[in-house]
Length: 402
Image (cartoon, rainbow, N blue to C red; front, top):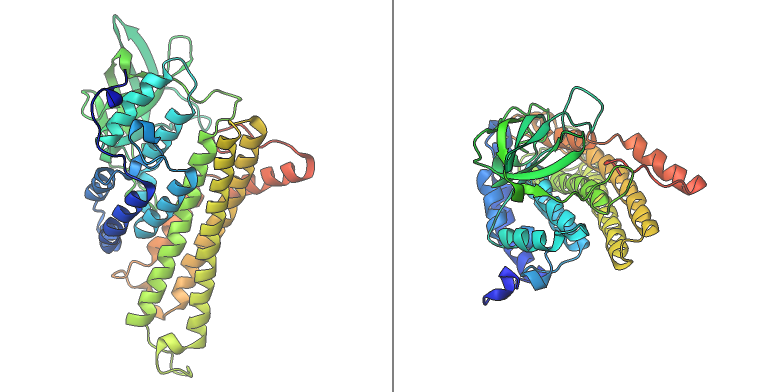
């Protein structure tokens, strides 16, 4: 019998309940975002509050105690989180992606893994990632894991570990003696697991995407995970993870809009030869804010539309054609969301004069953050893959970028 069903459980929250909790929490997170980014204050409390509010459980089915939401529900929530603080939103990507991997897994033992991990999520657990490495082809793995008696030992370094400093559990991948990838997950305090705050990108500085060292770290048999990604095969988890990045961009665009409105109302002055006595009445300020608003609206609209495509793929039992269609729609959403966020962040500086560049306002963080997220995946590849699909019916690549 399932651990969750063996004892009486409190009523599962609904999507509406979780959104109501977000209504209360996100303004608090937004209030300190600019200062945290300016002073490099890692948002430990914000991530912990999101986990405690149960927001990670949005997609967990009701039979396990979750809200049973659709992908569109998660994406809409993520846009809202990113509009409060895009760093916090991106730091949540491994945790939400882990849930999607559990839902999609058909491997032996997947059901037991779902029950174990969904219970942990319901208790407020946060999952981080120690994934990508540098020094060779993008996506290659050099970390090693070897059997040692009744357990394993892992060694190596991971240079992009999004969210791990905020996490209770850290997932990673290493190669075994046969050069086959092995997924495993470790408690954050495991001896030999070293997490560094050395991420030095110009934007998204607080995502805790720094280095993780595996110093001959112990890996127990029960910490070995079923693989949900196979080389040359597409999984619905990949479009979800890519759409997550587009959702962050949509949130950045909305955040830029919020700051533009606030700056125009509270700080900006009309230029000397303006026809207005208040900045908010200046036609060019109105034009600038209107442009930003349109771009924020567009970015959010396309990511929600792409989320519906992923939901349709689930409804079609993840048939390959439906999953390919979802991947194409997500690629289109990423292309437009990135462009919209970058332009919204640029137009923000036309709302006021030189004072918009003041470090105290930290308005440049929006462009830096949007540019950093956009550089995760080259936009040209997204557009080219969509073009090949439209022209020749060529499926998008099966790499982790689609």
